[in-house]
Length: 453
Image 1: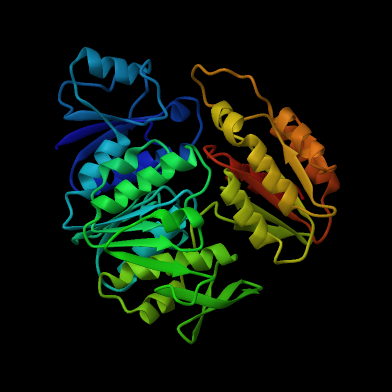
Image 2: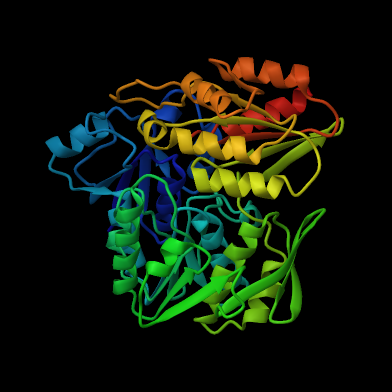
């Protein structure tokens, strides 16, 4: 390929692929409705610094010299760039199709799947292999804190080697496109698909995996995955191939014991120890000793928006978190409750369909995981456009929380009203946690709250 245009290039998944192609010598351009609306301008500037040309999303950049247009699954067929590509008979590829193409161009492939934890685990695998001198290419959906400044948008690790590590998404079925050498299944729990569908998807992935299938034995549904090349990791079963014990919260992370040796992580929560075990298991398959991998991970700073501490002021800490499904909410709250201090959590739901199917389960996790004086806040459901039935509101979710017994749960139509509530009520010792996905402005919202405290 010589020239490619990305439609929806500011998204974390699209920008990572665009950067990989640009670094590989392909001429890359792209458009994004957020850029046209004056949003995500830091991403625009970062991509332009890499030599990626940004065009308006009005079809004007779709020219006959393009090999193809890569369109995000988040954009509609009515978008001008997509319409123009069809009119000019320029091939259109989805991001999953292009990612699979890049993935299979490498000699070895590691696919990280699971309904939670795959972004952090993917980053961990890429980080360990990179620091161990294995020269991986890693393509992720999250931003790597250790690689800020090394790439324009730090959601990739780029080396000219023969190993490719990707985050394999099951939510849209694109996981079916990968035929990896090593597959990791971090967990299987409720998300965008039914549990039966998820088990089928991950079993099919295991069936296509050539060398090793690594699964989390602590999830009952993971135990249904069968393979002649199975390795397990666990926080509960000492007989697992990779087992961690004596997990303890530290003021700046977590400690655990692996095969008699104590290691630390800069990340909080037992779930991150499980992610580390999964990453260690994957790296062992490429010649990295398990203790060496664990030592390397002691310096891993994590991915942005995964319980990321934005800062503290007047004894109040502001935390940014990507949690958006029941399992992620449960894991985040479990980690947060290992430490003292009241929680003031703003959860911004995204998508009317996901909230219809999972909203009550998400609310139940908040009610179960928040105690005493903890406060739950929700603005209206985040929506980026398109045609959809708007027959559910965040107000309905808050009502459900109150029915389940969470009295200190409040709905405000706008984020500005939520912010006003937080600034009026926060006190020393509180942790303000901003949760939600799909909205790049949530981190800026965290910074704004911190500044005004």
